Image (cartoon, rainbow, N blue to C red; front, side, top):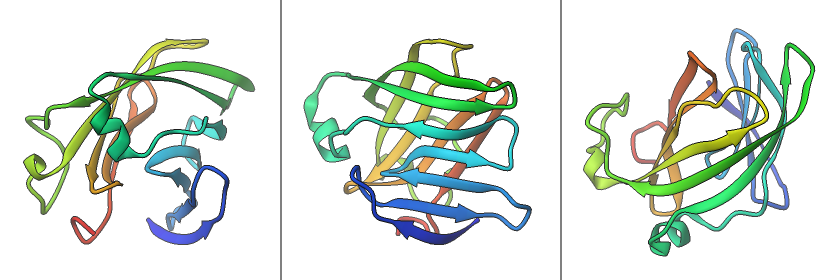
Length: 153
């Protein structure tokens, strides 16, 4: 994917990433804000105002929050996810390339409840206050990873 645009938004800049096969992914502070061109698509994702990653790491306890998303196909509007984000140990295995996972701060985000099937946990790797690697599922069995390149930038 290639970064096609960065849009100003109240919760922080939104990065718009494009793939040659028509997929489009929108990220805000490393979190998925929308994805099209895959099945399922998350057409609209509403995120609350979130603390920065450094602040979350310094908390020492889990951070609970809610995400609302619209999912296609199926016209599932207003899917409400109750999430718990907590610091985690570096995973034993991941698709991270070119950087030692122990040099990063890791988070795991679990879905406590949802108005549809619960998704597997997401993982985020942070360097400074920026997500440089993440693993996330948009449906059970439909997961992806992404990493900033060059590694660590």
